[in-house]
Image 1: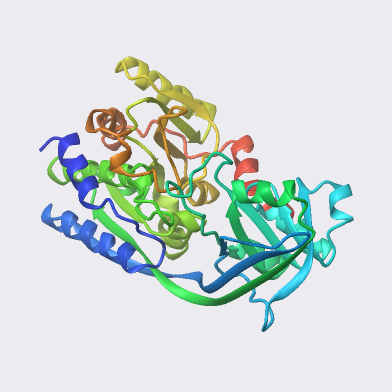
Image 2: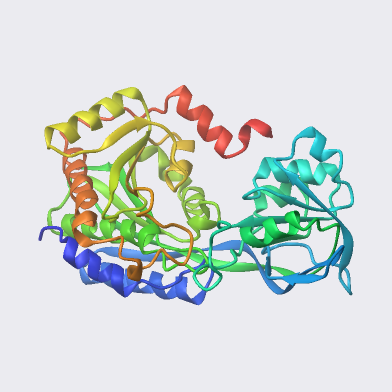
Length: 421
């Protein structure tokens, strides 16, 4: 059996629906992946894990002075609820949270630019804001063609700095609010924190010659709200499915683990849960290969590598030897490679990034109707993954040093907020 981009793309089409962390649809996709693995006679199991989630039952924002208008908003999952009857307060646009902005934030409903990052959340909490507003999209978006993002106060924020009221709105509405000089607002949020269950799908093919050396292949299969996630990241999920099919027939010298992670979009929760529950075997892992985003018709292939310059040189030479165009560099990548590198396992990410104007991510345009993905483009990353796998899986001496460079270690620690603890 050889790999097939056509077969992979057919599976991608079948799973092209919204698969948000902890949802019934995520579970449905996990069961379908498990079924496909079982057809190949490979040992597989579903490993559930708990995720901190939330339900927002009501979210409302109304400017009350110097004009009156109600705007569409979404409450952050795991937001605090406002008091009964809502919260009235002064509005302040704090832009990028410079010290001058922060002096004016106390007890106000504060809007910032862009996404709510952990460092910004810390500043806002320390400044004593009454509530937080963010915005998404662009000022040119049409309401009929876009969505008001649903976001979440992650545990990395709330565990360290506590809870607050948080809402998100459209960029065009945010601009109107500032332009018209909004001074006072009324907001209402009814929110509940819950524990949800997500799942990793885990398959194993035992090595015939070096069973105690493990190579791990991974991809996440969940999506964000409003997005079918065919690009991010069902494309990667079907690619590692093809690799699993190949090695189910061509038995590997080393043990291979194939993991489809849930809840990556919520902060790499699936891979974090996996490395925690498999901590006793991580010292046997010699490499993690992660595939996250592929199949963009117009784009470029890249391989951010969390290892050493020696690994970068090895991979770059392999790509060139096989006539495969791929930009290989020593760098971290915000995906399921991070927990492995954190535990000392070298990781290679294989990605195909859609070029500007021909790649959509984390919104409703990440779907097949957008017409920016195709099976030929998917095959580019699939063939690169297969080529790399063939070389390392059966190498007489494993060619990649089990080492993470100091540069990458520092970046991983910063990504996981270890440097600020």
